[in-house]
Image (cartoon, rainbow over all chains, first blue to last red; front, side, top):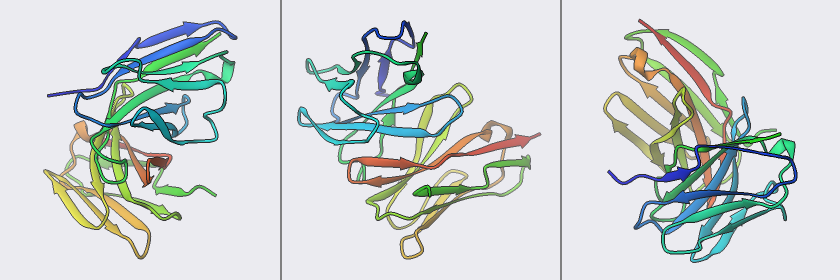
Length: 115
Length: 107
């Protein structure tokens, strides 16, 4: 069964460093998402991406964040200068159609720890 | 005020019991998603619904659009159902999540 994959599973970085989190969505899906979950808190929407551009983003997704689909398979989330409060689990998801009309499939997550 | 509210926050049941988790939302939605988060952190989509009722095995989800309310029911609960159940409101390509309901089913 097709699945969303994410790498790495755990990333440890120093404050101020750049990190890139990688996701491979399901191959025939057109919509891609990043979410984060700070430990003990609820899941939060970061950004959705369709047709090589951002379609929605939350207040969390500020200038420190960017997303890219550099080739036909990968979908990446870059944090330019990490802060302690960026420590969280980051989930990628993909869907065939818009999030309101289609089931989303989630990756296993990348746990980011900023020291 | 949270746009998506779930109740209860925590729920402990005996194996075999009928479980109900409730979700209320205050925004206009495209659809309502029910997700299951396993103890290891992974998230699985259970249902996406925009009207009526859906059933999958022992799980049933209902939604009342007029009342902005959805429920997730688990019949004949089992310890393997122990997880966090999350309600999420889809607004176009944005999703607003509830805080989750932590379900523990004891044998």
